Image (cartoon, rainbow, N blue to C red; front, side, top):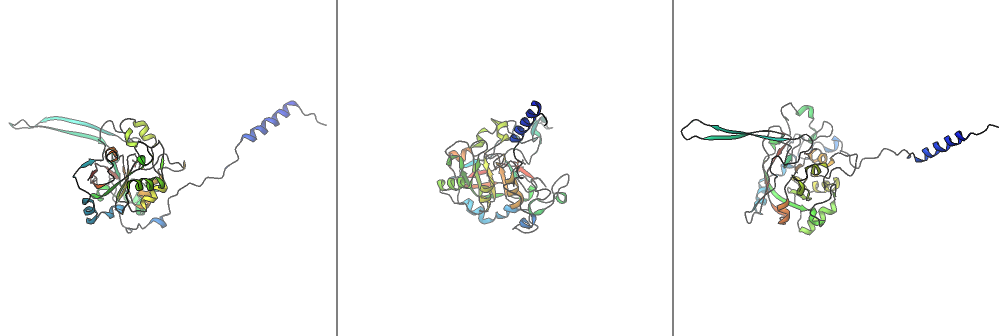
Length: 325
Ligand code: UVW
């Protein structure tokens, strides 16, 4: 009979303990959302050659409906100032260099000043996302393919210069107020129940063609706690975004940098609402809105007016929208 050594007993005990601590292999997790196949999303409901998506909802009647909401003539600005204190996502930048006084010829001694801006003019500050901005692999809204529409200098299709002006009914959905806070938590996911609850509290019904704008309160730290501002944010979850998209908005907006919650509660997903809105449904996104004044004055319904910059073939535009009531 073989003698069992103390070393052998220890080795068996240690390896059994190590085995007990090794988590059982888990089957690959199914992501909570996937981009629908091209066969399910193309051609878009606006037709196979359409580049305007939700912008098609702009009609003369849309403008006239918005105009009916103007009663006092009060104008509330919805854009943050473009300048050195703004937060940037990733490597984006906005550097302005003043070209100081040039004296013109003439007895009247006229001086001229101007500036040189080195910037991503489409994706900084309060900004409007077009359909060149996001893809699923190489496929954009309406299944335009990046390699077919992107040249070095511009997008030949889906350029932001095509969108035209937006003059429509704007609706503020104040989720922060509904939840009884000034600012939702750093990665709070806005749910369908939140949207329904806020709209009910405000006694507002959404209509097709509305600029649907969500107040999270996150804008309170814009320009003040910039590292925190872009690290995460409260915003729409996929289901809440889908719920709004089903109501045919002309755009979805919010006072955070991506409109949606970030990081997404599903760690397998990267900004899925960007794809859901821009790629799958052709619905524009409007980011980094300044909503404090609208929210504090409880202006929930207004005429929304915005003209994106006509940047030929651009993916987006810095914008200065206004609410008029
Ligand atoms: C990204 O493209 C990540 O962001 P956004 O559209 O929010 O600027």
